[in-house]
Length: 368
Ligand SMILES: [Mg+2]
Image (cartoon, rainbow, N blue to C red; front, side):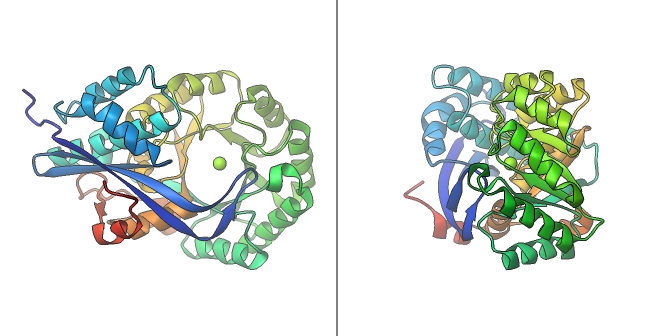
């Protein structure tokens, strides 16, 4: 009999409208769905979440709860391995991986709270703070909204800022270039300008766009071509000045090993709300380290703050507009990117966040 059995694994789905129409090079959207898992042992609750389809909740209930409930909450590794084993026939990546991620994060938070430790210290803290970059700059924004967002990040102390390019699958390169030029003017010469094409360009188009944007001094070129085109990423990487990054869709350790082995990126991205949670993130960071690469955390900043602080080869994490907005609405205890970095609270147990149920319930779909 487990000393601290996981007694409940509750899951809820929340859909939050965006504050304006949003789009990148290859997708548009007007809402964001969060699937939130609460793992309980005795009177202690750990919270984890992913940003993915509502179907993740069905996976948690039907596929994952049966192998997690009853296990000792301190044995997160056993639960993680049990979940990976249980989903063999369902498939590991995509919705299933997102669901595993939410449960894994909840279990790590639960363990830290049971032990009375901040999560980054349970994981083995390396950094007191983790640099962030502001992320948004949607192709749907007009010049005024883009300016206001960039200036807001600058006023918050953020010195790296990312905008979306490759509008409409790369069919509007002149507007891409104009928006990069505007962003450079707004943020001034000292801040770092990042761009994300979300896989919308072709190989040579990506190189031509970056040549034409030479005056903008872009430092980060995310998914210039499809993340599945590892040879293409490598070709662009060899031809352009900014660092090439990819990895946000990666769903298992092998995906990341292949990306690293292909020499496809200057910095590996990974998302603990997609790849398999904190447990898999730490293994991915080790794979990256073995290829002498740093990792950057994709989205969900409050999921990543603690594990990033416990990752020696972390570069930064993404202060993504949609997720920042939702996490600030839904949780007490959120972090402040003062001076362009997050500092996990060394005195709060777990990830230090408390769900504001009154707020969250306004956005809840169906019954939990
Ligand atoms: Mg991206």
